Length: 210
Image (cartoon, rainbow, N blue to C red; front, side, top):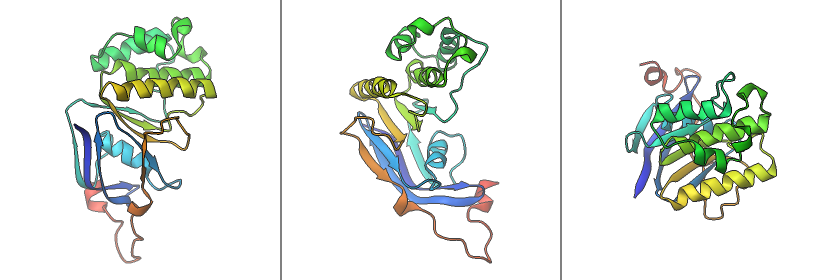
């Protein structure tokens, strides 16, 4: 079963095309790792797939309410406790309760602690725990292991592996080895947009501001 598909996708950053002609299928149980040099457009691709910014060409196909995005920001309310943050996101997404998320991301002992009192790594674990309360089958992950120590990276890799085993899918921009040998690489380098002519408007100008 295909969970997410892109055909001839083009995305822009700052009004300029970054990636174009990108096509791929992401199936149930599959993980794709986005690779490419810094600045090529990995974050822009993920944000476009998540619906946070419009693509300027191509099509994106996914089941309604099947996508969950975890970007550079942890998406936390600093005044709320760990458990309150998870309850908030569970209510937003209508997903399952928070007990599994607390246990799987090793947050049970921190459940009553306010988010502003967490370390950077603890905040990241809480941000990733949000994925487990969404009930969404496709995870779009932008450098998910930032601020995590080796033990926490292994912890999250186990969560990700279980998500795939249950029929979920993941598209991940990361330079870290997550210990998922079955993950396939999707290198964006061949899809880098070509240079813009000096006498031309930025590619995608009309589409980006339509």
